[in-house]
Image 1 (cartoon, rainbow, N blue to C red):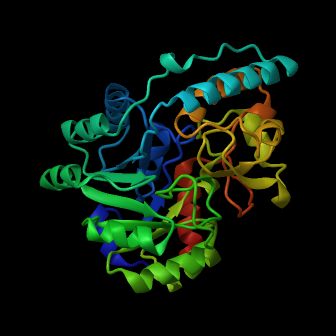
Image 2 (tube, helix red, strand yellow; image 1 turned 30 degrees about the vertical axis):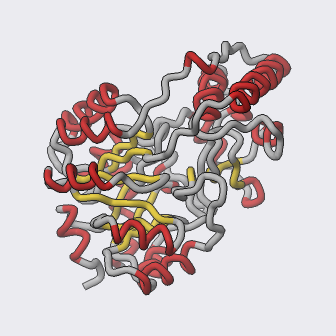
Length: 352
């Protein structure tokens, strides 16, 4: 049999293909479309508030009666020290000048105005809404909440970027581990925001497969039958795809952003902390070039919150040089078809 049944059975799907949770790109409509393709849709909630998370979960439920994954960030929030306060003031001033030089009208928030959410209220939202699949990244959920989620019948999918992280997830009783290769688009799921493992995806997958006994999914560079078969050969039983859906009908990206994808070159895809304070892979632009390797990069989530208003203003005027376009290293056609059609075609190509 071409597809392994272990993950499909655990996630109650026909095909062990997972639509990646891409915050700012994936939508409730994308989740529902992935479900219609008999795959697992993923609702990206990042670090939203509990109330907003509930609204999006309910919106998604109105579009699909099938199970879908909810994805959250489980990062540690750095303490606000005097040094951080000063760095914030300096970074805000630098961004104000940068925006002015590039004719972008934007009002940046003060540090005290930022709303920083913990994942605790999202856990409560997941349980309240009776969600049955929770995936997470940037670390591991604390033991007490893992127990609470399991008592409520929630399947847990943790993200690892190293063997050490995989072992921690297994020891915590996580049901499925998503191995994320360094070639994957978007944020690295590393537990340590500063010292990310620089391991190629297929090398990492093979090592994690040898180290743990938990079913594995793989994310990073999968875009056709050959890349999926390679991941399967190395031990993956599930396959997470994201970049192939970036330009889909259900993607939240605007037309000018999708157009940029169609003109991408390999050398333009970089890892950067400039937008969020955590390493993420995307398309290099003026903003990244202006901030990379400077002192104007705050730790996550403060950098992410501060630059968020600039990115929103840039999108309003369709300025691609000041928005984050996360994309993986595997450059392809970036189809504009529906998510359902893209995934069905992907599955057919893998079975032929």
